[in-house]
Image (tube, rainbow, N blue to C red; front, top):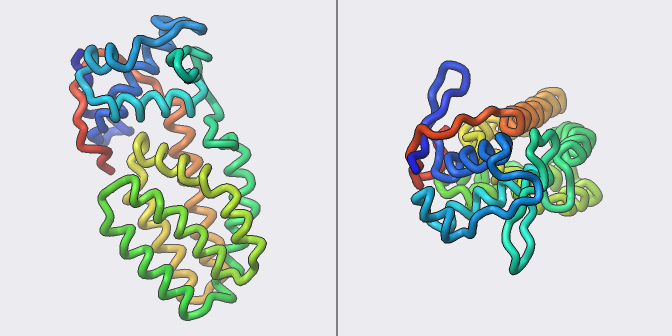
Length: 247
């Protein structure tokens, strides 16, 4: 099987990861009816052989299919097609994407404003150090872990323990969403820039700028997520590269 290593976003080509290529192939096959609702997908070993990818890459793609609501994994039985799409509202852990984003808008945007007014020098040092680490990080798993820590740190800077508790509650969902967007949307560099704008607003003590920066960040999250779940895939042109996403 020859899967493509590039795709076009608008007029700008972007190399995609092996996982994206595998996901695109499997999603396309499901949406075209090659695997009908209720069908069991071939075994992991068979799919790895056909698509010429490693098992970790395949498992990431299978997890993404499940997040998008297209498949369900049954322990000891395999992966089964649940829907032929299109999926409008992926699930991250215990929460649907739409529910998660709605809560984030109502919590994290005002929290950024409170943080700008109440942050301590220690809060700013912590956020600046975390941001520097994120901008240097190349490993997606490590970056995702720091992404959730960043949002927790902003909540901490608001000096209200209830805000931090809310972010703690959705932390697993945030991590799953972050990994999903980075693998399929090449979001890491853009997200770093958005995080830097938030930190700069906090340093300036500007509640208005902090609120605007956080709102912009969440707007971009929603835009990327929408583009992923509504994207159309074509099958048959490419070779996966296991080097990971490139923004």
